Amino acid sequence: MPNLLAMSFEGELAPSFDLRCLSQGEVPPDGWGIGYYPGGEPAAAVLKEPAPPSGSIRSELIKAWEHLEASIFLLHVRRATWGAISDANTQPFLRAWGRRDWLFGHAGSLRHRLELRAGAPFEPVGATDTELIFCELMNRFAERGWKSLGEADPRVLLEWLGRINDSGNLTCVLTDGHDVAVYSDRESAGIWMWEVLPTYDRLTFGDTELLVDLGKRGVKSRKGVVISSHPLAVNGEEREWRAVPPGHLVLIRQGAVREVLSPWVIPQGHPTLPGIGRRQMPRPARAEPRRFRVVHRTSYRYDRPVERSSHVFKLFPASDRLQRLISHELAVSVDGPFRDYEDVFGNRARRMDVETPYSEMTITATSQVEVLDTDPLSYRPLHQRAQIPVVWMPWHQQVLQPFLLPPELAETELKELSEYAMSFAVRNDFDLLDTLLDVNQSIFQEYKYTPGATTVFTTPFEVYTNRRGVCQDFTTLFICLARLLGLPARYVCGYLWTGPKNENQRQAEASHAWAQVFLPEAGWKGFDPTNGVLTQTDHIRVAVGRSYRDATPTSGTIFVGGGGEKLEVEVRVEAEPSGEADPGSTQQQSQG
Image 1 (cartoon, rainbow, N blue to C red):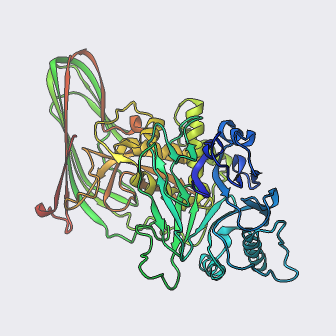
Image 2: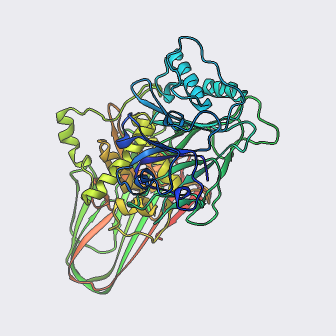
Image 3: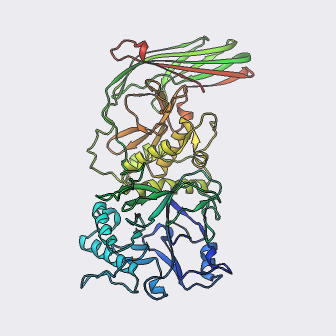
């Protein structure tokens, strides 16, 4: 059984903790305790029990109590080394500092007692080495004026822990309810980490003495990090846990590892933790303007002749300061009167009425476009911050209202998506740009691109729970999350130049979709969650709207005839670096 267990998730969960070590016939531990932050508040709640009896009522409470809900949990099971078996000596320990409660848990034992400096504000209540360590750390935070883990210099914190580690075993977890800091002892077995990734219908982990059920009171599709003093079975099976290397410090927030720091001198034979470094939101380098020739061909075939129909085509690439339409030609194989106009979203469109019978219609749009969006973040220095929530003037809200309303979903679904969206804001200190970059990158990394797994009727909540889809689904989810954070977002339909074939880059299917978010004093900025990038000169904009229905390239109504329909779409994008076609740099895109 692990004597130290910590969890951090993106948003709140209500897990069940089954202390099997307190069952009849088992030898109970010397004590146990659990700390958590109800409702995401900075105030922590701690439930502990020294010398617990078999069938303890308190242990049944944490197994069945539905109000045990938080995003951070810290559980400790004690085998006494220092101090009497009492509440004062039972972990986790709690102290208030910086208008928040801090929790501390320690696995191990020091060889000798720490001596706190005279007059230090934090003093132990009990007699354990763990509380001495906790008080020593809090005194140092107070001296520096650091009122949260986020304000602390991680390298200095690692140095402090390393010095305390000189006095004996020190594997520990420190949290302020926002961040979680995990330190692995330089010499002992240390501590293990498991990253929980959706999707899962059920998720339990534990051993013969402890079982944690994350879905007993309802499954939420949440990412998280579990820390344990030894690996645990997951759903009754062995699962890969990664050992935190000796002497390393791991910083976690909202279910994501933000940073891993190694000691200046790494113990021999112990590599650094693979695959994780400092968590930074990628920002694009400046790109060069590009010129493209795009041919978009759509063909409809019908079992019976269509006698009368009406159509709307939105196949004219946008032309503004970031994209220049050099030429455009739209050819339709069927004759009929038409008129060009600008729709309510500013898209150029063509309406066409056909009253002569036809069994096949082919629409071919040929465009030459120059894309000039070379530096999407040039509008402000990166050190300046814009925060969520954004304060909009009333007239701004009135104009942006169509792009602020989330989709019509069940209230419970919107609430869960809102909690999910807010976890990104909390993880990034409510910085607007970092939050959007994190959402963009997380959808790219954690959602599987799966053609055919969804339909045009798939909702953002279904995409969130199933974690798969195509560009339309990822864009719709991104827009929903942005709007739930109070940020205007709109759907963009266009084309993506993917360059030479690259198996690691998700390809556009016929046409590509991404999102734009309206940023204060910056305007509409493009985010492509399918590929985890900001849009620049590889993205060719055609139409925008509240959703794909407003921006779909071709739509229409058949009034008489038709029957079964077969649709074929082919898009050909050619780069023209010198203003002339370059056949050697052609990228084919076809309907999947």
